[in-house]
Image (cartoon, rainbow, N blue to C red; front, side, top):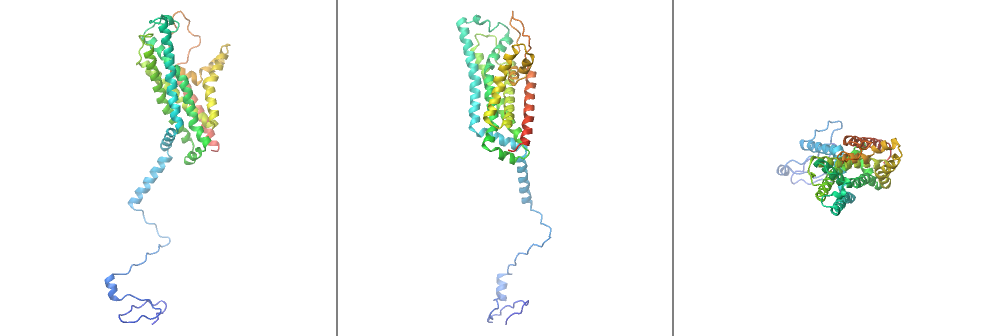
Length: 353
């Protein structure tokens, strides 16, 4: 018998034939043995309130949120820039050249002075115009002044590292990825400057310390009363660390402004070598403003940080122009860092990547 529409199918009794068009239904015995038939999943009711997530799903979501915020936070940006700094080969080459140049020039100066002193006499009497007999502090200051002779060249290498750290990303196009990941942009610029500054601070301290030890050993016969491991050596080493770190930060800012490796390197070379030389020549014609501007250049600030003040030798007049103190040198480098950073920040926000 054919079932009517809307009428439920009747189960087939044992021995009863199945009518054409009627689906076969399991018998009562089969339903008892096999259990109830599986019911289809109920369709979600529109407008029903969503079910709360399980405890494990909520913990996983919170973990993802923390990781995402860490990546976008300044700590994550700084970690990323630190990894990128050490992942390029130019960083290793530049830092190696920095140590070799800084310590190597101090070694050459020490060998030259020791050779002149050896030819004139073991007591150094033939170089009285260069070294004056004095107490231990004066001899230590003279030794450290010679040891810092390689810091100027090391500063130039440090500036090149700062420029390349950011300009290579602009020239290669990888800076776009960084700026898209951090839309505010300023954390990227600050993280790059801090990463370079930290590395150069450590390298500057180590370079100055090694240079002082080398020169102290070479000039022990010329300056017998020197004190190599003293508070003066520590101060000069800290000054070299601050000088190279500040130059690295300033160079990163310059690179962010010009966005070109060649232009950035040309600017830092001119700032550290060409401009001071020109101003020194001009100041020789009694032009006061040239002397004042020259005093506040980064190179002069570095000299103030890596030099122990000494009295004028006996029989020689004191210089008319007082040298910059270490505190003034630190303030000068801080001003350079802040001003260059402000310019780089404004241009980075306004320009397209």
